[in-house]
Image 1: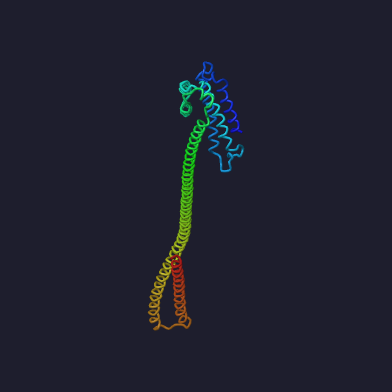
Image 2 (image 1 turned 45 degrees about the vertical axis):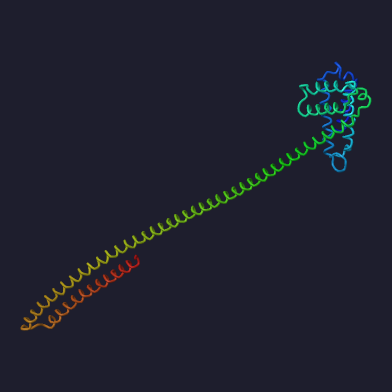
Amino acid sequence: MLFAFALIAASVNAHALVRDGRNFLGTNMRPDVVANTLMNVEEEWRAQAAIFSQCNSTGYDGVGIVHCQDAPNSFGKSCGTVVSAIVQGSDGDRNVAKEYMSDVCSQASVTGWHKQHCLSLAQAVSTLMSADSYSNRNGFDSTKVCTGFWADFVQEEQKRLEEERLEREAAEKKAAEEEKIAKEAAEKRAQEEAAEQVRKAAEEAKAEEARKEVERVAQQKAEAEAKAKEAGDRLAQKKAEAEAMAKAAQQKIDEAKQAEMEHKEAVAHLTEKSNTTVETAKQAETEPKTDAQAAVVPEVNGNKTAEVSNKTVAINATAAIVVNQTAESNKTSA
């Protein structure tokens, strides 16, 4: 649709130049107005050349709307109309046409490629016009001018399209490289983040293990202290018991010693009394005794001695039991 509109617009603008050939170069068609009209026509010619250059091998444009050959045909008609307007407007006079087109192409609004094509068109028309004004008015062949002009447009468009293609490919390549770099950077960041997460996880696991180890050691220490305290309490208790038993044993020993001393004193006393009795008996031997007196003295002495001896043995046995218990308690505490 855009291509068809361009063809129609080019034809309309070209015909505007030749409504009246003489007015084209007269005061009614000022060079600035002609310059603007000619630039619009050149825009349409360029669009036609671009569409033609983009045509594929099937002979249709990229969307299959317009046949590619319509572009050069439309350009030929439009260009022929413009060239005829220039020739007829100058009344076939080559110098007049050249001078007026120079004024048109020198307008301030005509710049860049528009100025270049304007000058090229003026030069082509001036070159092909002969010195015979009549011949130019009635037999000028605009096809030669338009054919070369079309070739220039197509070549320029192909060059422009090639440059755009190269720029596009370069941009795509750059974009692909940037995307690759960005992807690699993203992958690298992801790997670094993953490594950082692994490192943090390892550090957290290590810290957790250390915390558990500290708790375990603290628990073991607490248990050991509790056991030590319990053992210390038992040892103190056993020691206290042993000391009590030792004290009791010492008391029993002291009692045994006291009993032994009493025994010795008793024995000594008995011995003394026995000696005294013996002396008395010896004295009494010289004197007559009754049977009852002779029996009383040995019995009394024998009973007293047996009583003291039995008491000493009992005390010694008790002391031995206490000593054994004390030793056994000390052994258990150790």
